[in-house]
Image 1 (tube, protein in one colour):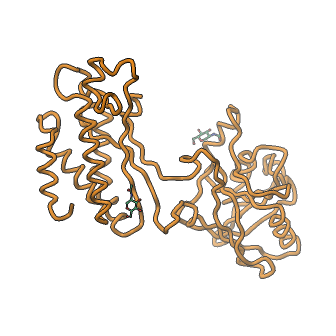
Image 2: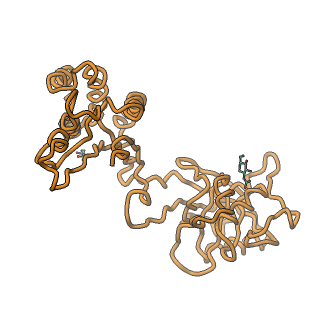
Image 3: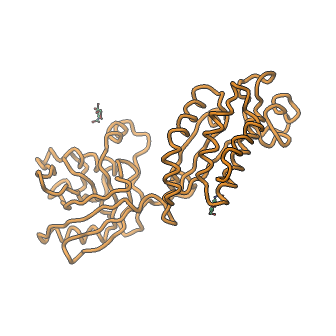
Length: 332
Ligand SMILES: *[C@@H]1O[C@H](CO)[C@@H](O)[C@H](O)[C@H]1NC(C)=O
Ligand SMILES: *[C@@H]1O[C@H](CO)[C@@H](O)[C@H](O)[C@H]1NC(C)=O
């Protein structure tokens, strides 16, 4: 539990991280030529490699004459996909089956491909290509996969092969600009934080991060590009201990909301419950700021509070917090 307390996480709310159900992350793929298959098609981003979030990439699709499943090294067939200077990058189309997705992508990358499209071998809704679990041999190459990959449907794979087989030059764009969830055109993210400033290196890192990120966070929020939400971790005191000295000093509301004692010393300095109360105040500041349409004011409050009301100067209290609120004046 303490570990969670000490950690802070900036979670981009990527669906597969935050939700228990598994969401296939899709990006858009559009064929620019030939005309016969021009248009947008869905594909599912591989769960390894580096999708170019926020960007797009144009390339020419190549379907290898040999090693079509890309399970062997292309050098064994004297095949290379390195594009000539000035030419579009190669997007290698390979078939699903016989080996792990990640191995196919790794072999393609080594042969010079810039992206991989895996054509499904059964008619089904798109799935996310995942990495093999706990396989020591593959673990070594997976971390070196840098090219993006995507699964395409069997039907679309066949259309691509037909066009390539017919001598057409097949050009397409892979586009990741729509892959970050932003249902209302804003990216939503959550910041897990804590007002405790005396827990050592982790608290120092958290405070540094908040200070450094404030400028960018406020620009993004004011510009309507993001919608953020701060969270404060609390835990509760097990029922049997609600009357113990520890829980009395660390918790409010009969043990329902607790934070660890900042100095790990129940008899001196601030208590865990002081942290809970300040965390609550900061959440309240966010609520009010958000309701008045200025959520970014939260960043001003928390950074001012850090500077003006540190525990080591014995100013981590309501009076100091009130003075910070006052100085924000009109904006809150
Ligand atoms: C992965 O990259 C590292 C660092 O460049 C290298 O030392 C290692 O041999 C690579 N692994 C494989 C399997 O190529
Ligand atoms: C902040 O305000 C917006 C707009 O009023 C609302 O949609 C959103 O749910 C609020 N966020 C929180 C965490 O209350």
